[in-house]
Image (cartoon, rainbow, N blue to C red; front, side, top):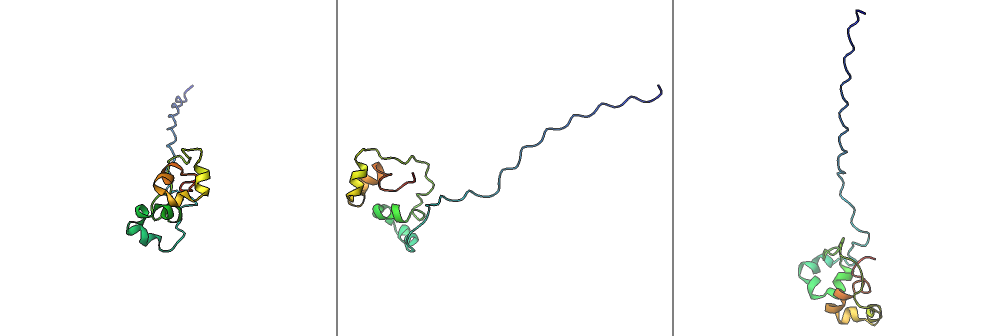
Length: 107
């Protein structure tokens, strides 16, 4: 045979990983303010002065959306207390320990 030998096939380079998506994730559906003045109220400190209202109605302006904190009640009585209005009367305890019943977090 006078034919030259066939050169070896070069190795195929590995496929590069895909680029990460360039879009930002959408905010949670419940990440909204239910009153048009929430932004103003938040700017004057109402998120901490009036948490019973603000953490429920002004979630976006108080920046409590998208929390990765677990949503649960720390006390078995939370639901009963919330039904009696304790989220508003005793927000310091309730909004910390009864988050699910006071609706300050998602299910």
